[in-house]
Amino acid sequence: MVTAAHYLGLSAILFSIGVVGVLTRRNVIVIMMSIELMLNSANLLFVTFSNQLGDMTGHVFVFMVMAVAAGEAALGLAIVLTMFRNEETVDIDRISVLKG
Image 1 (cartoon, rainbow, N blue to C red):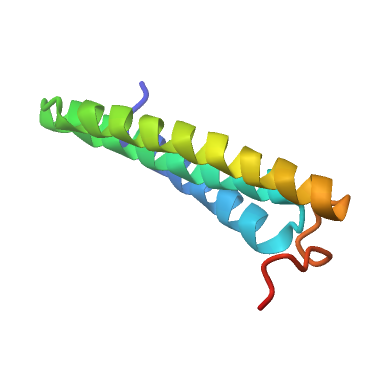
Image 2 (image 1 turned 180 degrees about the vertical axis):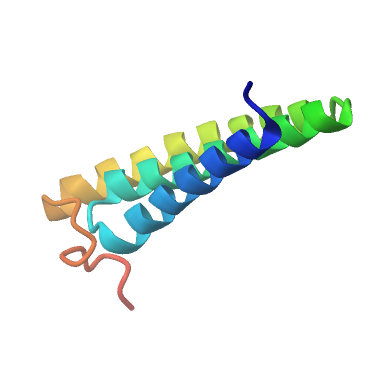
């Protein structure tokens, strides 16, 4: 039987993979995917605790996080496309547009 501890462990593993992806990768698109992975691990925690407590508040937070993640993905991809058009790369180390 799958318990809440299994979901907590899976969420910790997903969050750790996301953190490693953000810290080690230099491609903007991969970094955004890693951030989405971390947000989804938080969503898994919200749903797990919501089911354990018998409350629907966690499910409401999941919908809010999904809405914010969709906006973040759309805005982030627009910024990445603009940077790619200007600099011809999506490598963070090569992009100098944001340097002051």
